[in-house]
Image (cartoon, rainbow, N blue to C red; front, side, top):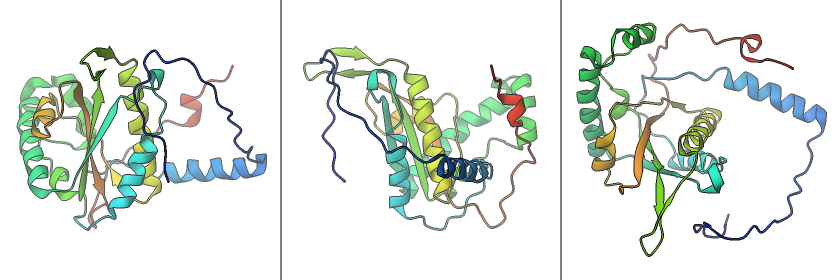
Length: 231
């Protein structure tokens, strides 16, 4: 699969091209939607990962899916850093656990700690070293022209959030488990991974198979009637 090389289009003229996707028959669409709903309802956030290897291409393809997400002014303000190196994962875990200990010892505040209690989380983050891969997602706050001119990106949080949602969906539908981990603050990730100044860490996503003894919190999702309003 080959595509044209993307370059910044800031200030370029509008150039429309035809878009004529095949229309899916209603019966097929209903069956596909029902199947996707069923499969995605089995998705769970996992904190107990097997160390069994995962085919890298499966993860790369999931990232490619995420990169098709819509974005403000089509500026695609994301970078995905894929990490398999054990030493790098260990350094991330150590730095994350240091921040998490401070948070759990009071920085989070009692209201946030109370909200977390049903999830059984704590400052120990074994998933950061057990999972075969970590995907560290960075958001690009701006881009630089070749001459150093800075251009702001728009709707960065929304754009990167949508991309992460599509990444989690692609990973799950490919048979993998994942977790969105957001140690706070996350500045250490940019420093450790030597990312440029225009990038800010958004999330760390461990990826792999659930451990054989994996457990998850006994949670209930809101029903469709609780989240959908028709007008």
